[in-house]
Structures are given as structure tokens and as C-alpha cells.
Length: 342
Length: 180
Image (cartoon, rainbow over all chains, first blue to last red; front, side):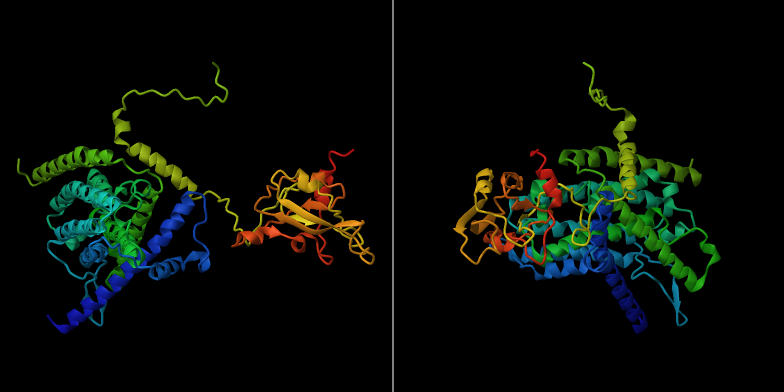
């Protein structure tokens, strides 16, 4: 591997890291704005014009708070929890293809940190590790409510990962590849998977809501019953990490939804462009899709009430998994028919 | 019985149909409702910059009036304190001495006059009880403070200053409703 490639990848990592954090920062701001609009309010508008400096003010507030560690807690695990949460939600951005190849100084630059041939498996794996952040944080707090939140979070994530995995397998079967770039390139132009797999999309979307702990599946942190759930005992920037990780993973799951079902960086009429124009336009298309799905996440949060725990399990095990499996079976049959196996 | 509002709904526990069990149409309906709220005008008033227009009979912070020549109207008769249901008013009377005719209208005046704004319920009974048209409730707002004793308003805060007279004509008309 030559040093040019390493530098190129390092720059790309830096850019993606910054962008993810920036988007997560402004997602907190837009969450409050969108909530306000849905409720006929104005929302934060004091810090800077239209309140755009609000995330900075919130960040400063988080840093200035007392960093409290309960005396009965397991200190190292207590610190490790938010770190794992943040790490796992950021690391998935490594394999996301952000756009067509750019050409800089005559050399082609792939807008993707790493094109694994098992990309989607990597995402599923990292998602399962993501539970540990919440589980360890809730366990180490040595608090009933935290533990309850953590248990709920892990059972919820395990249940919904199954349906999510099955719906991902459906897409993988259609594409014939686990690599995210192949999945995106297979949906060239307007040939998006959503038109072939609407049921699969609904299952995947519901699971994505559950995996990111967003409403209506925000049981791990339901304020009314568990006083904050797994982050009850957290304060200062450790709490900030947990909250921030939620927004980062919201960004990443919007990106993955866009990749799997809405063509990633493909957009209709992309054949009329080429070179760097195409690359930039594809990045713009991809990000507009991501922003749309972040908005949908917020839209759902401020529309639907929270599920009860038994309803959550009922939906996950008795509805989504059978639907996903039947969908998988039908997809398999259709693929087999098309290939002339019968 | 005939329903009064015509909004009565008969509830039933019949099992849900397949479409209802899917929940997706209901969710889409709910999301359409929230989406419509995106474009609705909000009613928020940005308080320090914009202020609501008060009703003409608004009862806010009290004022102790002076007459046209700048003499205090209050004679410390104590009727306001008697009328006050929250017992927020206390006063001490004093006799006017020679040379103070320009300060107080009659021979007796209030040496101290305190209203505890935390006790006051802004009912306006003090104003109604006053035979001298000395106390009025104005459209000013009692500001918030950090300490409780800062809400004990003395004469220095209640008596209207000579150079900034406070208009109470709106309250005078309503106050005289009962009299003739």
C-alpha cells in the first residue's frame, strides 16, 4: 500500500468524522425545531440567528456540568459505556459509499473509506456490539432504573436485529453481493430496491427505528417510567456521548436505508453527467436522501406514542420476523424462477 | 337521551379488521395530521420583544396616586387593608405637620404603606374600598425577583413619581361602575 492511499484515506476519515459529528450536532437542533413546528411552536431561536448556535451552547453546557460518577458504580465500565456507544455508531460510517469516484490531480478517489466485500455483515456486527455500550453503561451505574433500561435496550435490539437481518438478506439475494458499493451500483439511475421490495423496506425501517432507540421504540430511555433509563446516572459529557451517539446512529441508519432501498447516491438522469460533476451531484443526492430520512425519523417520533414492552416484543417476534421470512421466501422463489430453475 | 353537543361517539369492542390490525393506514393518517401542523401559524409571543395587549380592565401592579398638585391622596384610613382578602396591605398613619401641605392632601397620611406582592391576589378590592381614589391597579407587571423580601413593596415603589404620572383613567371608569 503506498503512502498516497493512506493519506487519502486519512483525509477521507477526517472529513467523514467531522461531517458525522456536525450532522449529529445539527440533528439535535433540528429535532427541537421540527418538534416545535409539529406542535405549532417556534423552537430554539435565541442563540444566534434562528438559534443556529444552539448546539454549540448545548455542547458548552454539557462540558461545564459536573462529571459525576456514583460511588457504588463500577468506575471503568461506567466510563467505557458511553465510549462504546459513540465508537460503534461512528465506525459504521467507514464502509458507506458517499458518492461516485472523484478525480483529483488525475487520480481517482473513491468516496468510501473501505469497500469491504462483507460490508453489510460488518454493519450488522457493529450494531450488535452497539448494545454493549448501553448494557455496560446501565449495568455499571448500579441503579435499578438504569439496569431496567439496559435490559430493555438489549432485548429490544436482539429481537429486532433478527427481522432486520432477514430483510437485509432479501436485498443481498437480489443484488448477489454483500458489498455496499455493489448494492448501490445495482440500483443505477431510478432502479431502486424500494420498487421491488416495499414490504422489506417497511420491516427494515421499523427495525431501524428500534435499533436506534428512537420513538416509538424509545423504551430503554422512557422518561416517564425509567427516569431516563440507561443514562439515569450519567451527567456531563458522558451523558452527552450517549445522546450524541443516538443522533450519529440516526444519521448512519438513514444512510443505510438510503443505500439499501433508495439507490444510495444514484439519482434519476445521472447518465447525462460524468466526471467530477457526477461525483458531486451524487454526493448531493445521497445527502438529500439522508436528510429526508432523518426528517422522517423525527416526524415519526413526534407523531407516534411509545409502545408498551409486550407490544414491542409482540410486534418484533410475531409480526416482523414472519413477514420478513415470508418475503424472503417469495423473493427467493422469484429469483429462482427468473434464473430458470423450475 | 338527546346528546347536547352532537359529538357523542358510541364505542364498541368489536375485533379489529385486518386493515386496522396493520396499523399502517392509521400511522399514515397520524403523520398526515402532524405534517399539516408544519405549515400552521404558531401563536408564540416572543415576550421581551413583543408584548401582549392587555385588556382595559387588567389588574397589575398597584400605584398610590397623587392629585393634580402632586399631593398624595392616601389618608391611611386602612379601608384597603380591611378589604384585602389576602391581607397583603399594611400601613402606619402619621399626622401632617405645618409645612407639609404640598406633600399630603389631608391632615392624615400614610407614613409607611407596604404591599406584599407575593400575598396580593390582584383582586382589586383595595381599589374598590378606597374612598379617596388613592390606590389603583395598573397595567404594569410586577417583575420577578430572586429574594422573597424584594416583593415587599414600600411607598418608594408604590407612590407615583411626580415626573412620570401613571394613567389610571381606564380603571377609574370601571371602578365607578357601582357608584351612581
